[in-house]
Image (cartoon, rainbow, N blue to C red):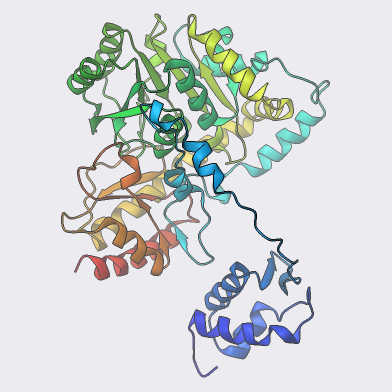
Length: 478
């Protein structure tokens, strides 16, 4: 190939040769293509990925690449234009249109093309997930008597008790509901706590998935700024007074995206302010089990200091295990608990019993604490590697706070920088980063990007990712 290493050039040559193979026929191995065309393995991988995206090739891990079967004749498309009227017919009567925008969530869920370094991930790299321990737990769970029967709608009593102990204070198992992951629990809670059209106070910036939930439910997110000590109590009080809101959603521990921890001094002020205005605090305690090994003692959840039912608490196992291990606790006190239970039963009946049994097996095994200790050290090492590389190689990206927990860093762009342009340039350079705009309920204070270090294989990949991001910054920030 005379040193032609362009992905596009190689894809064009392979595309022209596909007729040599019958549908389902196997293409030469990646090694053979490397030798024949004198290109790198990465170029071959990307070229095959491009053909796969076009529907011309099917790749099977461990088996190779195959010519795709002939596509079936596509039936004539129907006319769905009537749905535009049907879906918006009630919008004139609604204070907030109930459109569903999942773009802010999909940024972290979408799988980039082969060869792209994922600084946009929201979950642990497979090498950090307790795959063997989860597999063993699931196998043991499947052999338990009654494991495939119908569970209690509130969840298995032993699992509810385990989550209750993790909340601290005087929380009991009777105040815990088992839910299908944090996103589902937040959806249930917001539906229970606020009617359509109502304002809901949110941290600014905040988790885009929560903003999507609120807007899909017809709620009106109202931003309250945070700093390195968490939400500012005086601004929270002003927002309650101005809006009449009855719900405040927050992440007091390693907040997404800033990494802030609500300070000890502010914790009682937040609870006191919410009680004063007769409002609920929806506490999303999403990464308590992803503290780094230099974090020191963690503050207890807000619900531990709340005997009056002000706090509704959400805590999931997903971030510390696997994206598919969707087991979560939804904790509340008082009459609101019955409303939460009713909505959850209507929406999902109950969480799969084998999954609940597997969760019990996992957290009760010696492997669980070993896994948490390993992850705590690995995340600190990755954080330090990414922080050092960014400060050394891309000082233009300001890093106002370095968290001691969680899985990401929040970077502020120079005032002249174009956030979208940087995200696009980074992807062209082979690294995916998360834009900051979706984290704001209103106009952002500046351009930002979020970079995650938990979904990467190790320090070498982090270094290469920063090198590619430097290239993108040279293109956009010059």
